[in-house]
Length: 342
DNA sequence: CGAGTTTGACCTGCGC
DNA sequence: GCGCAGGTCAAACTCG
Image 1: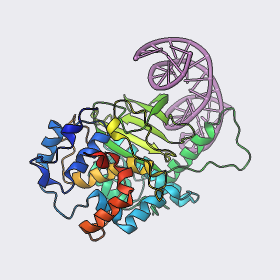
Image 2: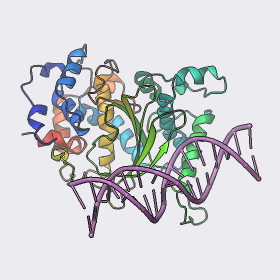
Image 3: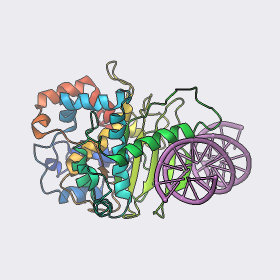
Image 4: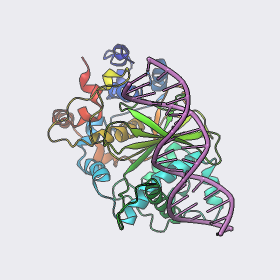
């Protein structure tokens, strides 16, 4: 991984015009240790048009409303069932991708969910579907029994894990925000800048591929992630993050020094570490929205499954605003490698 | 030897 | 009540 930086941050790249934030695109790719070289270039070539209406990362984060949304999505204690349901709609998205022809089966079974989300057969439709359950007040799932079920399940799972440590009566563990996304990769466990320890693996029903469970190795960091491969498309890895990092990217990255994040600015919450995972996926999606999903089976492209884009009107931000944002330090934390450029 | 992985056992809730 | 599935634990194991 180290030593790729020169390739990744080639400012004079002839394709620079394709992306307003071409280098950012590369950064995102590199966050997952997916060398964005030939494969990525080919992908870039395939993109028909990425015009100015696409938000740059800075633009995205400078969009106040969306920014707030992102924050709240993680900060807010998800006490209400509505929010839990919303969060677990993400799980459902994951399930939808995992289960073959999910859109068909769900739609056909008349007992399926009745929300717009019930039909998800591709990443793009999922992204669209997620527009109906924004990460923050995401919702509108009150009538979705399946989503409720999912929420309950996860709650139970948390209880279950306290095998020999019974929780005091009434104690209810707060559900953490979850974020699932798909990544085209031959590698199951993608490097994302954090160190993970595998603590379990389970066979997944109706899938030949097992699901792996990882925990962040940093002490007291509650973040977990599940990694599984879509059996419909084995080249797709589905990663689900849960929780928020309570620390910065560890300095002991395995050969991914360029991913190291600088110390957070005083006004930036530590948990933005989580947002980086979450947002980089989202942001990549904004650039990939028009790209075919299987452009390159081995290029490690990430296809987020949630986090809707703000309306175009909200995305428009001036360049000066971007600069302000950069100074603000937010972007650095989310895409730390950006500011590590020479 | 420490850190990480593997894997069988275990717990819990749900559906039948 | 039973079986199933998801999630987690923890001992044994591997690796650098």
